[in-house]
Amino acid sequence: MSEEPVLPRIRPEIAALPAYRQGRQASPDAFKLSSNENPFDPLPGVLDAVRASTAINRYPDATAARLRERLGARYGV
Image (tube, rainbow, N blue to C red; front, side):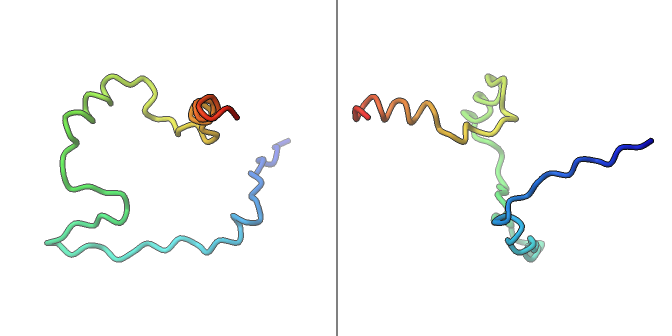
């Protein structure tokens, strides 16, 4: 007996978004930067930060808990 895969539930707001359409490719003598691309090597400080990090494959905290705590402490809320 095989089990059906459990599909993720998608919020209606997300399901209503139009499908992604890739933009035009850059010409051979140009750089396409609209897709978060960069034609240059990383800055030395960025390389140092990557080497020192143990969790670079993680998204930031979506709740911004540390920032909210510090702002709350600063403004007394």
